[in-house]
Every structure is written in structure tokens, then in C-alpha cells.
Image (cartoon, rainbow, N blue to C red; front, side, top):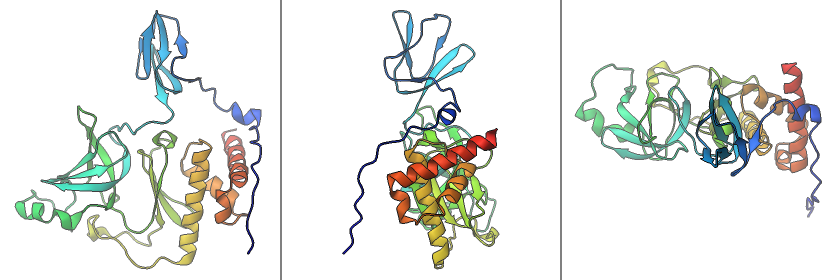
Length: 293
């Protein structure tokens, strides 16, 4: 029986031109950010002996006179308007609890979801009794952040047909800091799959639907068998996302598509090998730099 044995290879240095594409100021806990007393202290910083020091490892961000440090690896801190992918963890009275990778479980109120068939009316006791028929523990949903409570918990809503219960697909978890904020986080990629890039670090990959089911209300999912070709595309996209995440590259539609195209000469299972990951990510970096000019 043949055994695939691979020896550890020395990590290659990225081209200086690629490494200088962004002049980030990286700091670790205890590093001095500035000794100027004219700046205000933001998140991730503290004052000691008239010096502004970093309390977390991350990137220094400055807005006028305010300095803060954005942690490279942290829990998700939601903002109003964010697109999130979450998993139902509990059904409570007139609300669902949702795991969104934040410090506290998010809340999806019964009044913040579409009723089946798109009815517009007040929620009654019958709707409350049927909540588990709409969404139950373990279901995956896509939603939008409607509000942020004083304790940091998020209030979600699915009052649009593009949100709702997710059907067949693959869930990939990455660091929330790697998701690039864009105007839209729903993408139909030309390779034949669709993707939802949740701001909270959950990414959902699924076959591109042929038509939208307007009457579903966001609760009916398609459970028909998925062809092998679609499953292979989704598996390749999943490995490409993990490759970009391991090299700390920002994830958005263009970077994922470039990485997918760079991975086509390789088999899907080979995309888990470190030397191939470095090759396809390096090619992706080159194409992104060329595109930015």
C-alpha cells in the first residue's frame, strides 16, 4: 500500500513588493504606541507613565486624535447592518437564541422574522406555539444585525427573502477579522457555487439555486440530492478559504475566486498540503496586487 510521506519544508519569504502592499503598524501587548499626550485612548490601549501602550496584539488604527488597536484574533463585535450566519441554540418565549461567534448569544425575536407565506400581521399565541416548526435547535440561518444591546448582545432580523433558514451546504469558520467589509456579502460565483460571507466569521457555501422560492418565507429548504460536480466545486472552495485563512489573507469574493482559479491544476485533497497552500496563496497575492495596480 502506497503511503504519502512529506518532509517539512522551509517557509519561503514573501516577495518584498507583496509584503509592502499595506504599511500596517503591528503591535503586541505592552508595546509603546506613542508618547504624545495629545491622543485619546481607544479600545485595546492603556496609559502608563504618560505613554500609550497596547493591551492586545493587533493593528494600530487612528481616527483623528483617537488611537485604538484592532485585535488580529478576537471574538466578533457586531455592528448594525452586519450580515451574519448563525446556528439556533435555544428556543425561548417569543425569541430564538443564536450562536454568532460573539461573546454573548444573539437574539432573534419572533416579531423580527417573516411569517410563512409573507403574511404581514401581529404575532399571535398560535405563532408562538409554532416557533419550533419555523426554526429549531441546530438550524443554520442568515440574518442581519438590527441593533446592539447595552451588554453587547446582538438583535437580529430576517425580514427579507434573501435571509432565513439555510439548507444544504458547507459551513466554514474563520477569524472574523479576516472578513472584508463590502456592500454585499451574498455572491454567486462563476464557478457554479454561491457564498455567504458572514461578518462574524461563519462562511456558508452552497449550490447556486436555479430560482428563488418567493413563497417560502425563508423557512422551506431544498433537500434534493446535490450533483457530484457541485459538491466538488464546494469542496474546492472550502479548501481555498482555509488556505487563505491560514496565510492571514482578507476574504472577499475576488480573493476567493482568484484562489479557486489558482487551485484548479491541483486535486482537491492536495489543497490541504502546506507547500501547495503557499503556492496558490502566493499566486493569489500576485493577482490582487496586479489588479490594484
